[in-house]
Amino acid sequence: MAPRLMPRPWASLAAWPGYIWLGLLLLLLTSLVATEGLRLVFVLGRAVPAIPQLGPGPRLLLTRVVALTVVALTAVVGAYSIWQGLRDPIVKELRIALPGLPPALAGTTIVQLTDLHIGATKRRSFADDVVRLTNALAPDLIVITGDLVEGRFGSGRDDTLALAGLRARLGVFMVTGNHEYYSGLREWLPELRRLGMRVLRNEHVIVDAEKGGGWELAGIEDWNGRSIEPDGGPDLARALAGHDPARPVILLSHQPRAIFKAAQAGVGLVLSGHNHGGQIWPFTYLVRLQQPFVEGLHRVGGTQIYVSPGTGYWGPPMRLGTRAEITKITLVPGQQQFP
Image (tube, rainbow, N blue to C red; front, side, top):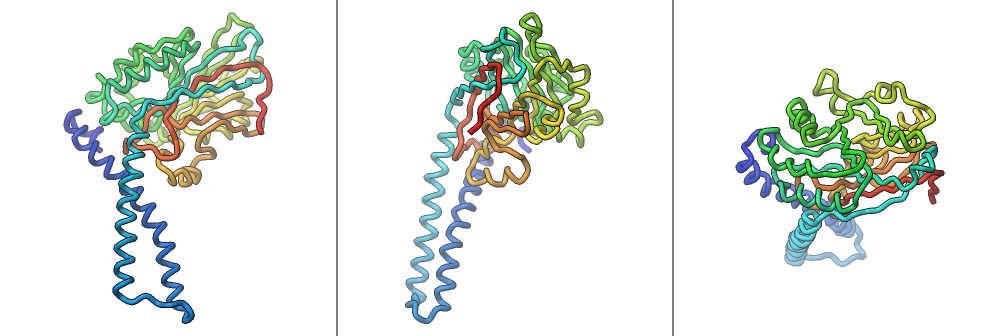
């Protein structure tokens, strides 16, 4: 709650130790669950007369050794996870074939940023680094698929000012994530527009129309908006209203679960985030209970979806089993080949 309720200096003081402790607790829980399997073996073994039994002293010693091992393992993995979480995002390059893309648009580049969560533990320096890395890729278009900010407008505005430096030939486009709603969408929207971003709220635009008719970029609101704002939430039908079937469509949706309706609507490609690639293993498996895909390039019917693991992180400044990334996508005509 600190980024939403406290002034920035106090929020940072509360967030750093609180989030790190939360991450360590998650890792500790994972280690303890694993040791319960060992404990079960010993409990079952005591019921087998042929297996030698440990006395109270050795059992106590074994318990203490296991406990110390769990603590040491959690500390080592926790330190590694923090190092991974605080590293600069990698640049991942993808070549995606988009059916219906005019040949004149072959080679169009899109840089996807998502889940930056600029807030109590990610400040102006982080935004500066993202802008520098993104602009170095010289993209034709920049898209931000939600969760750009983390915290109320008054405490986080200064840290987002660097994003006004994002440069792309065709502009910078964005859709809302759940954290834009949590952080006060009505306050943040005008500021995002002042930073030079076009926020697509259940609407679409024509891109590069002078090159073979161009293509269409659509964006839908985050699913959580339904319960926060009277007019919030995704509306794909409204976003595609007036769409020209002759043009391919790329849809921006913060949450990957939009893929099913997008496939029914004939969307060519969906770009999403939200999951952070699970962020801290093994919670990757819990994400799969809510979302159809955790990260990577997938296909449902004739529609492709790329789920980015995120450019930042949420909560604990930690990553385990995944890396933050800036995604550079090069579009080509044709049909994508999947293994």
